[in-house]
Image (cartoon, rainbow, N blue to C red; front, side, top):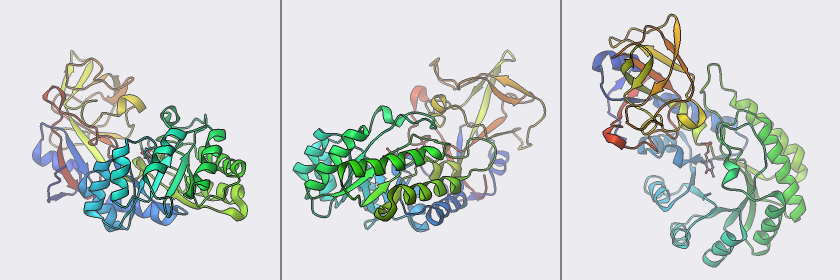
Amino acid sequence: MDISNSVWSSPRDYLKFHAPVNPVMFFSPSALHERALRFLNGFPGLVTYAVKSNPDMTVLQSLVSFGVNAFDVASPVEIQLLRDIAPDAALHYHNPVRARHEIEFARKMGVKSYSVDSVSEFAKLRDILDADGTEISVRFTLPVSGASYNFGAKFGATPEKAAELLRAVAEAGFIPSITFHPGTQCTDAEAWGTYIRAAAGIAGMAGVKIHRLNVGGGFPSRRLPGELDLEAIFGVIRNAAVQAFGDDQPVLVCEPGRAMVSDAFSLAVRVNAIRDGADLFMNDGIYGGLSEQHMIGLTRRMQAFRADGTPLGGPTVGRRLFGPTCDSTDMMPGLIEVPLALGEGDYLVFHSLGAYSTATATRFNGFGDIQLATVGTL
Ligand SMILES: *Cc1c(COP(=O)(O)O)cnc(C)c1O
C-alpha cells in the first residue's frame, strides 16, 4: 500500500474533496494505536501480531513503534519482511506444514519458535533444527463453534495425537508448548475456556510441563454495531489458565490478526448503478477490498454519503450488492439494508475492513485499483 502523507480528518472529508471514482481504503493510525495498547495492556501474556491479516509496511512499522515486538509469520517472505523492519523481533513460524527449504530459511534467519500438528512435519523439523533453545508448539483442534469459519478443518491434531506429539517434542529436547486457534472472528469467549482446559488435559496426558500456551488469534473485530468486549475474552483466558493449570502456569501468548488491524481501516465504495431500481452495483467487490465478506457476511457497520459528503439516512431498503466484475459470484451474501435515497455516484463506507482485505485483493477484470488515505478518525 502507498499511504499518502496528508491526513484527512475523516473519510467524509476526503470524499467531499476528491469525489473519488476508485475505491478508497482509509487508515486511522490512532485507531491502530488504541487497539495495540488494548492488547498490550489487557492480554495477560505476550502479544504477537499475525502478519498475514495485513502485511502492509505502514501497519507493521506502526505496530513496532507502539511496542509490538513479536510476530506470527507463515512464510519466508513474511520472515524476511519482519527481519528487515524489526531485526530483533521474536518470530513464531506457526504455519504447521512447510517445505524443507522454508524450514531451512527460517533456521538461518534465527527463528526459534515453530508449530506442528503431525508426526511427519515434526520429523522434518527434527531433521533441520537444533533442539536446544528451539520451541515447538503442538497445535490441536476441538469441534468447538463460535467462530465465523472453522480453522480446525485444515490444521490441528486431535487431543490424543497432540499428547503423543507433545511427548515426542519434549523427548527430542525441544521446548514443549501448546497452541490452538479457535477460528476467526470468534465472538464466544467460552471457546477459549474450552480450549485452555483441553490444553491442560493434553499436557497431563503427555506428562509434560509446557513452557507456553498460545491461545491463537480469532479475537473478533467490531463488525456489528455496539462495543467490542475484548477484555471479557482476556478475563476468560486468564481465569481458565489459572484454574486449568494451577501451579504449572504456562506463559500465555496470543496472535491476533483481525482484531489488531481490522477496525483501523474502512473502505469507501462508489455506487456505479442501481439497476432498474433494484440491485446495487459497487466499484469494488469480492476480488478487491471486500474479498472476505462473501465468506463471513458483510460488515454491518456502514455509512452512506452523497457525493458532496452529506450523510445519507432515512428509510432503508434491502438490496443485493454486486461488485464490478463480470463474475456472477461477485456479490455480497443476503440482502443488505441501505438508505432508499442512495443512488448512482453516492458512497458507502464499510468499517472494520483492515484484515484479509487489501492483503488478498486482486486486479481481476481490471478492477481493484484501491487508493489509500490516512484519516484521524474513521
Ligand atoms: C491466521 C492466523 C492467526 C490470526 O487469526 P485472526 O483470526 O485473524 O486473529 C493467528 N494464528 C495463526 C496460526 C494463523 O494462521
